[in-house]
Length: 186
Image (cartoon, rainbow, N blue to C red; front, side):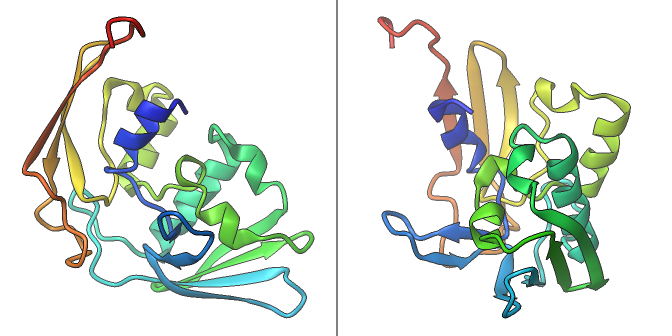
């Protein structure tokens, strides 16, 4: 959750909603729209069509449901999911989150590493090996894919050619990031 890792990881991973840079205004990401019930205890998200994970799998409501349930169960920020009673995928493009009490789910699902949507195959792999992601595995939908990762040395990202957001494509073909652990050297 350090700043440098976060800046790299958010080029690979995305959530349902994000905030416009420099504002507190939410905008669509992997969800095209959302609504909450009048009592604030039910939130419905419409999932964007035509999104592909870097693994080649298609994004759908079931993948979103599974990712959010995994984040709630054992994610690094699982505490943010405390109000959630259930998550359902009643249609391929709909996710419904029911709460124990009213809470700002729009803030919860936009919390980046606490709510990133991950490819189903990666979620399955993590159940067999809880250190699956530590080797630098990429299972996101963002503008860049992870080409390589050398712990303590280097991260190389490559533009994802099938990125869904044509208005905000990856700027560079390749991003080569040196990891410098020593603050004085950096």
